[in-house]
Image (tube, rainbow, N blue to C red):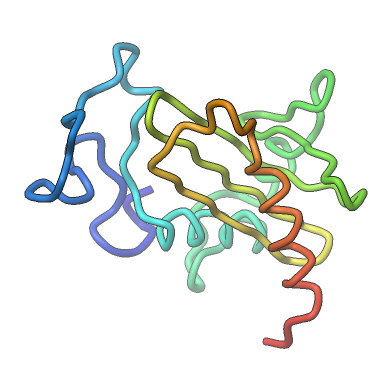
Length: 148
């Protein structure tokens, strides 16, 4: 992922090393599959590469066949690294969700219409329930009305 913008995602960099951190920054016990630190822009760039069949800013970073393989359902609604989700409006998108105490995230994209969304939250959903998919549904609905 070093090809994708900014300095690139990292397991070492924290968002605000001198900022407010009541619970301090910590690492995930099963590194490296958790706690990859990256920005919304970096994740959006990553999603754009999938929407463009493996091309990011005119540079091929994944073969088109690799993207097809990753987005082919293997069992249930799971591809390779990606899950297929049905949103509350009936649309089907690909994505990946993650969470740990104090954080929640979501990256989803729709190859059919070229839209995607990223949500990063520094909170645990807790008692309110997981509202990430509902927020994503609303963002995808808004994207349908946008002209680029």
